[in-house]
Length: 427
Ligand code: AMP
Image 1 (cartoon, rainbow, N blue to C red):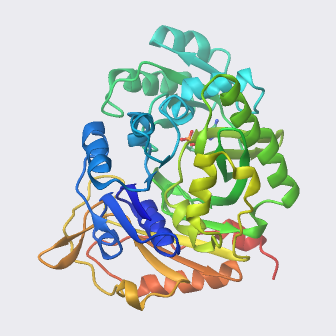
Image 2 (cartoon, helix red, strand yellow; image 1 turned 135 degrees about the vertical axis):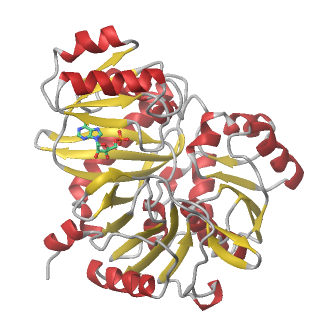
């Protein structure tokens, strides 16, 4: 079968890589793809925010399955348009994707369905922010309601700081677009966990859990990024805890969306804080995470096409997802200056070609391009160096050894990926 993947980052490279391993797949296309994906799939240029362009590609190419990577195509309703035209597509409808595209919707939804989350207030102007702040102790979390590529959350230590952050969100100076809603949230403490569930509108089943590293600097310092690395292990949560998260968060969300007439299909990524009061939802994403996917898919033993089909057909309850035991990691090599200003077009050396790579160490491309037959940087996050092994330390050793061979001008990466888990891992 012919499969089209929409998107062009490390997550999509990992999806294309997993699809290429499936005996059910004969051809993979990717729109727009990137310099690394081009080695595995035919890439088609597209603007992932342009609905017509994307629909036209599907109509022209007639893939048997379309898989949507990023949130932007979901938010503009690509799934709805493709379903209308009777194409098979993996991902949620625009209405179901509101769990991610509107934090205000997600908070009210969780309240309606008794899903544990931080106390909050939704404000539509600065007067409301001023008024509601009285109910919060400091620090308080101020969140832009709409999509913000990880930049819409500000932790504030005073009312004044919170009002300033909200003002910048309403005016558009923080994110480039003016927000109509701002969410104030109780500050939670604890370990963070990303829990991934496959959903088919009725059922939710567990895929895996992971942890990512959002801050640019070692020791979790410096500004937030899209993610500087991630890891996934068997022991990241106990089997009892995973069951609890599946039942009380993922399945409850699927049931709630179903009862409201917006069945949720696709990947539900639950960002959880393990607080002293129990697990609480920080946010939902309605797609695979980046860079968690680059770590998780290395461990996936089940044919990924079976996951997509189970979600589309409503048969996820009949699927057992097998993950390779042990651990996997992903370390991001980023451009110097990221997440601030950075240069592009720097030539990358030391990469093995796809043919030379093993299935245990894979370098996925996040932001690369081919210029004059040379692979160059083309984004803030450039490469996602990923490895799988029987334990975390071995996976890290493999990934860092691979990374040591690679260089480009200004390259930066964190040397402490999975540091907290490593301290807890039994010797
Ligand atoms: P979000 O995009 O909502 O997941 O937020 C991004 C990051 O901000 C999370 O991964 C947390 O580290 C932090 N964060 C978000 N909400 C809270 C909260 N209520 N309390 C503490 N930290 C938070």
